[in-house]
Image (cartoon, rainbow, N blue to C red; front, side, top):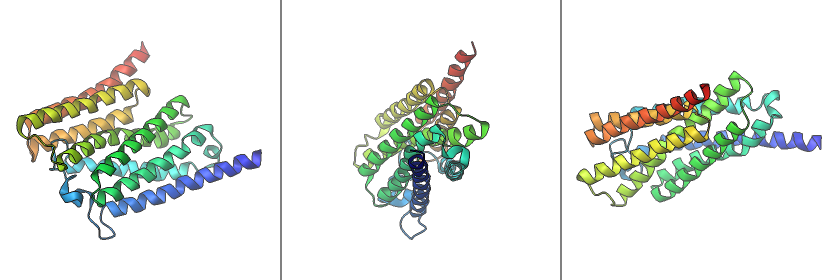
Length: 262
């Protein structure tokens, strides 16, 4: 029985490591290292920073740096003896690997211009990360390092892809010709932002008021605000709504945590 457990743990660790390699390769494809189009150039620029009212400004995507560094750190962390046999890591291992592979898959299908497929992949990624962080909530962190490397990384990851999913769906609909234009488009964009903010509130309540998730959502919506207030397509209405949405995301966690202190 012990030998089977050890073998299972080793398989999990190898799977996560292989998934990290796939994720890195997918990222290199997405940024054009192998000569293909970069994400923002794919599908005729449908996902560019100025393509839709929900697209975050270019600087928003720098959040991938701490996310990828966190994923690399986690890949090493889960090999350490203390983590190898820990039930927390046993529970999330398959979801970690799935999130990495889905991230790579999203970049690949987007590069092919398959936007509707990319929406499905993004939805699967959000679901996998939601399950992963819910599992972390059920099995509390056992150290500060664990909290930073595991909870911090996957909290940022989940929060960011929630915003990215909203932008992805909007870009796909606009690319398909479902763009009403004018004030109607602005109102629709505000409604999408409201959905993103409501999702942040739900995640704060459902997943224990995690700052990493709220910070990532606020980061994404904040850069949507910057994009609409300083770049095309310009919209003061959408810019202000995105800024308010960012504040709502942060306030939801602050309020949740304040109730715990009472």
